[in-house]
Image (tube, rainbow, N blue to C red; front, side, top):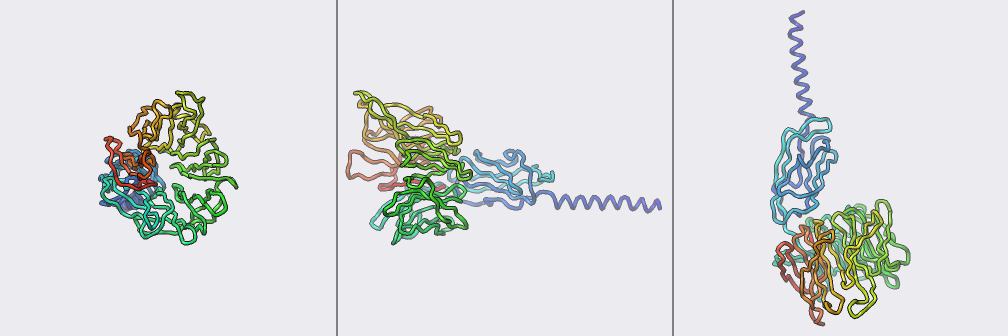
Length: 448
């Protein structure tokens, strides 16, 4: 009997050890897939990194587990079996990004990842999109930062009324039809177009898509009625029944989504900017006499736009001025960003990295007056304000930052010429150099 026990006990222990080892092998976390895949090229600088595991994982200090070279700031998330890194600041153009996942991250059951992984992908340089007219209508093109390659962005002979670039690198555009217009979505990677909404005999412009791609906003102009904003929920790639965005009978325009989901637009009837949070239905109103479009900060928390002020006109002081105001809809407060009663400050544009703001400025007093607005820049907090151009008769407008905040695209025209055309320029913000790209462009937007 003792001999049997002496044999049975080691056997039981061996079987237990085998069973435990088998269970550990089956339950231990493993990497199932990564995105982008190793060796992928030509990706936008905003491409997120995702890693899918064989089991749910703990949300530990992910920044210590996942390393990236070159490093960039971003948001780390662990959602079930998937680790996601979304860059807040895009990687630079044409750069190889190395991703390393180190061993040690634990599953929900407490078991560690024993084998890490390393892989690479390569970014592409951003392209600048723009509209240009010819005898057949208006078309959307794109040009590389060097100004060498100019190609048609939206294929075919569509006559484009307006367009915008979505957060997922698609082109949302309004196309003129034989009876009116329609809204369409073009995926340039898949080279596929989806019809979102038929506007019938109306003209639909200013199309915008929310960051999550679930809400379409556009401006509809029909014969005999005011131009107003409408919205429609996107389901299975198509727009649902449109609903009025503002108050009935109010003229509304210039919708703009923030990265955090706020929607800003202007109500001409109420002379106010309205801010709507679609998820909570909250609407915040700020009085504004000019209604010139503004710009959202990179984090989506504040919207900066110009507003008009009035002086007692004298020989030295002009009768009005324009200042930049910052609206914070979450707290229903506003702040002055610039104020000088000799200035006309308009067209603010935040850089994607959140560090800078450019705007157009013109002196209004007799001693310093110029016919053209110059490009000025400041830190996002209003400090270090400085001019970037000094061309008195040239007007500068249409500012558009590249996704990596390296380039500023803008339009320039001679205020002393009645026949001159808009010229498209590119400024390298690090070097301060400027380059003429082409003539006749408008409606500038960068593609990631």
